[in-house]
Length: 241
Length: 282
Image 1: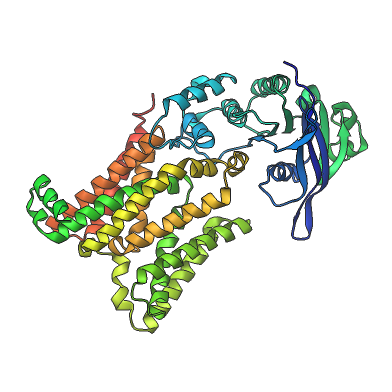
Image 2: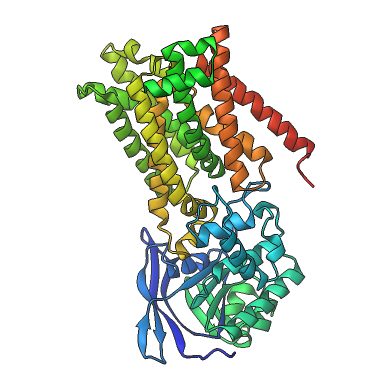
């Protein structure tokens, strides 16, 4: 199934201020389903802040709206999120099932392993080739394994907008490539828009439909080629692309 | 209550069970240990050990304020103060960027200082000094009923809200994206700790209460593979050290609280050894 292209998330005039200082300012982004938008920027450019304010975790001005253009009306947006890291340590007695169930169910994981829920979770994990991890402890997963588990959590249920904060470390090159392949398939399979904060400029070039260069504001927007060739990009990253 | 007493005598026909104070203490431990064992699992996971310790310390201020206001039941002023203390701590923690341990330490020291200052100035420190070490043998029948209510409430709470609190502790933004009210969960959990600590502090003592919360969960964490065994072992360790501590203290004249903590400590080091040797790793 190809995505229909009739769903659209509009981010309008999003600003976050701490004290007198703007962390991000007047962000306007429009993204359609089936589109993979990647956000790049240096440390401190406000990438994580942008994601968190889209999710409503940080106080912000401006709004995030979701339009269904087939029915021509506004709808409540469902957002899935893949975090950069978890507050978890090696050997913590939290299995993938425990974590997954905590996010998607109210059946208390400390008391029982619900068979129906267990099967459902295994099915969700299978879509990302992670069903064998269900009884493993989260703290003992590799970076790539954890990423796939988190992706399975973020897409149960399937969101309209999927937001990903790419981990800086812990995932090897092949793992990262697999991950991007999975994302490409996801956006094709479902009516889903994807926003990804990435640090890997090569992979961004290969997979992004559109790229935004963020530095408190949207300083450049376009295809990877356009952004990488721009003055704004060279000022911030130098001549690497 | 008579029925429960008789039942205890039949099930445990030992000579220490003929005293009512031992029966009461036995029942109290049966109720308090599991509460702390299960709350402790999350306190350890969330690295809140210092937080619950500070809450214990805030009891002194709660007592002092209750006394100043001339309240007959200082439990109420202790609970109210602890709840305010806990919410305030959460609020300030979320507003500042530097380490939570520093903030907690500041709050904790101020709470002790104010409590001591007021109590000493009014000359009533001796009256309340028993709160420092606690005395589980002085617990009364009606107080056991309170503990029973607290026990049931904690279980209900844990049944319905554990998943959400766990979700928040793993990643608050992810929890938020799943529609969980992060701030409410943080505060509700802090309030639960505050209430449970205050209800039990007279029997356990300000100095030892945190060890009852932390040790069983920490021991269990050493050897558990998932949330279910984590809770189960924590409860078993808490009950075992509580009841064994009570019985040993009866025969040896060592105070009950310290005896319980010593046994919990031994269990901790045994589980720590098991983890280090790696018996559990396949």
